Image (cartoon, rainbow, N blue to C red):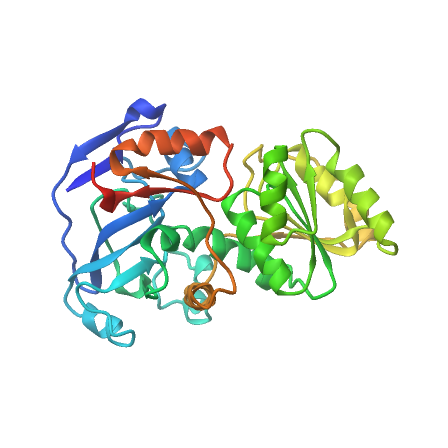
Length: 356
């Protein structure tokens, strides 16, 4: 099979387009013929390396995968039977891999499984013509959902739902501040917050993204590069009357953004973080945290059950995938550069079935 593989940490030159042996589905596993894979910042981190984190190099990147069942390993047919999945069935893949037997997995929140890992980070991902995954990670893809749209769902939608619903417990009538409104997680979170009946304030990095964020349902959109988002939040809330802070902040930026976000919270507010693209080192004044009863919540991925449910909600047109751009398989490095440039709105998807 053809595959892109990270040979060592470094610049784009360390990612090679190779001919590799086709993987074989073992016991309890399924081989997927990959049709599309969406990019995440994880693809950049795996290539560059992260201090204190070890990637199993060489590594095929690609966390968010859609394709068709190509081979079923011994015993895996039982796991697929409930969804009537057979060779040739269209599917998307839950990128989180866990043991399936521990207390965390059995309680329905597998991301805290001691053996939890992510495709494209802890084991080979989907930037290849084939990938082998546990049968438990295979989800039936509705006929109304293309491979390109399906690949844009798993990590961003699962992460956003866990942050919005499971962690922040956002309620109708509340106000939420969602940072980086053009990112994959945030385009999902904006839609989800509106579905739950909240008022959405979001930030973007350019004026051309304002209309796009509004079209997704954002009530207020702030270009953080031209004005202070904290000042704008204060102004917006002042015009609305009543609230002196937002109820919830969703942040995956970190850095100075984190401190200013804390100052935007109302008494009893909740900040949920799932990343730190602008820096992971922050200083926090603890006094307002306990005086104002503020909660700071960490979040990574979400449960398999939630992704199954979210797939159904998308099929019912209550939420929808947002694809910024697509690239052919052999243009993977161009796709990663577009992601790295940050001038995107939605997901960058590599169309592997389009050939090379």
